[in-house]
Length: 111
Length: 112
Image (cartoon, rainbow over all chains, first blue to last red; front, side, top):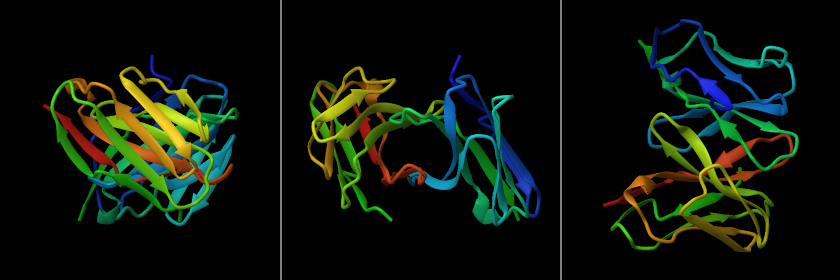
C-alpha cells in the first residue's frame, strides 16, 4: 500500500463548478501538507501549504486537513479553464527531508 | 523566488552509457532533492541532500548516485542508463520550514 493515495482521475467539470480533490494517507507522522499544481510539461508549483489539522483559504482555493481520518482535501470554487492542470498532494513528517507525493489528479475545466 | 536551473532540458542516451543531470540554485538553500515523475506514480524521491557532501537515499535510489560539492549544485548520475530510467527528472529545493518546496522545470530523459 502506498503511503499517500490520490485518485488519478481524469476529472472533467464545467466552468464555474466547485471542484473537490482528495488524498488519504497512512503515516500518522505526517505534519506538513501541501498541494501542488502542475501544468503540462512544467514543474510542480506550490499552491497551498498547511501544518497539522485545519483549514486554509487562499482566494478560490481552500485546503482542509483532517488528521484523525488521515484525509486531506483541496476545494476550488468558481473553477476556470486556466485551472486545468494536474493537482498533486504531498506531505512530510516533522523530521524533514522527504516529501511524499500522491499520484496526482488530472483536472479539466471546460468552458 | 529561488532560481533553480536544470540542465540539460532534454536528453536522449543509449542503454549502458553514464548520464549526469545538473541542478543549480542561485540561493544558499540547504536542502536539495531529485525526483522522477512517471505516469501512474506521481513524483518519487531518488536522493536528497541536506548540505555539502551530505546526501541520503530516497525510495527509488537504485541505479542512481548523487554528489554535492558546492551548496549551489546537486548532480544526479545514472551510472549505466537503462530503459526503465526513461523519465522526467525534477530537482527541488526547500525554501524554509514553512515555505514548501520549489521545483525546477525538469529534464526529460529518454534511454534507447
